[in-house]
Length: 457
Ligand code: 4AD
Image (cartoon, rainbow, N blue to C red):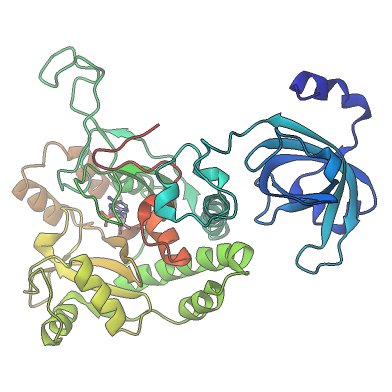
């Protein structure tokens, strides 16, 4: 009876198969049904056996009650089962329906001694992270994956509803958009980059940003976005850096000011957070605070003001706070607190801190660029963007200064033929999940984290 083959033989006579989430809808109460899933709790008692079965479709598991005689040494916490029985209304408000079992099949056993998760124990995210191949079987991580999936859909639905074209930007590219030297080079094994036989004949890398490809498309489509894996060879073990992360990037043409850009940016970040929060976070206390936070307008301060705030504070920082220095996580977190623990835009960074594409603020007394970062509670920098340098002469001289004029001749063409003022931003999807879920470590919001010295599975 335990083999899959035997189960299949009963197919024709099978009662309706329900997902656990469907079982909670009242429609099938009183009917004979079957469910398949994994045992998340197991309580044999004198008269009855109580199990909770989960199939990933819902945070809640379905309670199954069976006569004690149905207990079997193979049945236990973690094993995969099929249960057939009558779905009944339950007297307990927290558990609106339960399944009165007539038959239970153990489809896959689970040895409780070797299984790293123990019944009735609350395991920390750090503990379950040691078992990347098994952690989706815990309530905590499976909930997180459902939220991640829903938030992904919310991102796409926001952009679709707001007239953005989805562009699949390439994973393999010959450009280093950010110029920060954090590239992973791609070659088949055995090829050296100087070797004429190298696969692409030029050095190529895993993308650090889809921005330049979006800029190509923004010459014909005024609103474009992309959402995909992004790679940075950052040798960091921090709680907010990964070597592979997902980035949501948008590019908007005919945008002349930072305010135009931050307006779209704020609505995007708030809207897709609110959509996913409403659907999935409602049982959690986070919903109200998030809602409250996102409906407010976000303060906007310049980098120069930010430096003043840091300098005037009595806080001791590890990194310098002089004008011209990059803002570090400690500075970002302080600024968020200083502004009332809500998201804050920091604008007009020193020109030298930003990549070649950032628009030069020529009229500013200090040499700045029209670049913006969005800082959020708990995480610091969530998103970075800028107006792009659309003026051919300025862009050419900037590329010349960086020795990149030949490499980016195609990028200069974009300014030569029908150039328009435009800008965009990139938002780290994992940092966004950390922020809305209050998760401390970025490795706990991605199914398979990659970081220096770690690429398991
Ligand atoms: O600020 P960044 O480097 O901006 C860009 O790449 C622009 N080209 C985007 C654009 O304008 N289209 O990266 C954007 C965001 C950061 O704010 C951060 O949230 C996330 O990407 N990010 C990382 N997330 C996890 N791990 C890393 N190593 C990250 N590096 C950046």
